[in-house]
Image (cartoon, rainbow, N blue to C red; front, side, top):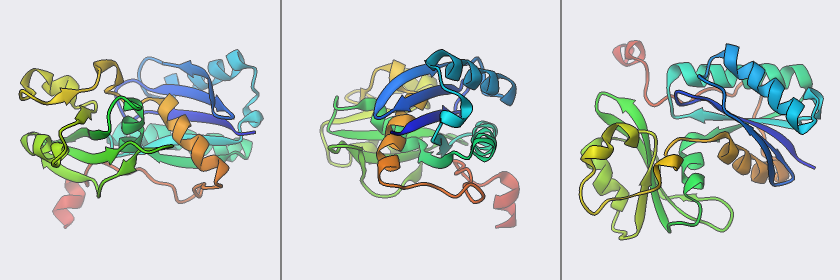
Length: 224
């Protein structure tokens, strides 16, 4: 049995999902991503699927890259839930979750999230048997650089990521986009990844799990 509660809060609106033995059994989409909306959404989802809080064996949460505010809300909520219930905790890379959203509709995927300053955090994946496989580390690029980086010599790359909501009208000819309904990271995909890691016993430490921001804060960059 692997009862997993998944949280995704890196974008404007949060999502919550429940997985039970590799089956998605429920989702919730609260308006916004604040602690005031996320906690009630979790309670309502658990009520709908008939779980008590202590039935959750693992709480999985998107750890970024993403926005400062969203990541802080999601990870703090996941930590509090895990601490209160004794559940395991598992942090999931947001870029990997976006690649999962493409599914088997492409062989190669390039994903990106907003890094501010007209830049993106991007990473390329190939679709594997279970989970997408990263083709090298993530990179901070200009939007123009992302198109070349994403193609990476492959002619069958599909591009996805929430940054596309802002730039879709300026996408160059020949670039193939995934359906816009899948541009945002989803808790359902966080839970899917967590289901695979759960059976392998790959958990994170409650006290050391931290957000992975798109880039250092301005103050951190000034400190060097």
